[in-house]
Image (cartoon, rainbow, N blue to C red; front, side):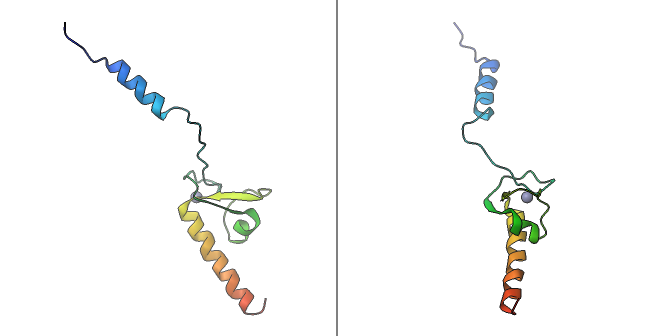
Length: 85
Ligand SMILES: [Zn+2]
């Protein structure tokens, strides 16, 4: 008797791993971006920072790249505040 590995079995196992997971992965809320989010920030601040997020969102999820942009933008904000805004 020869034991044959069924290719079907393997791909079945693989699709089970990739398939629906319990833990939801949030994605970046900036329009046109679908990177996984790393941070959640206030929607208002994100819009002020020039990020293209939908109005009405109180909290937005940002990916690494957009969070960096957000941080840059808010840094500028803080400097303005220091200058007596
Ligand atoms: Zn993004």
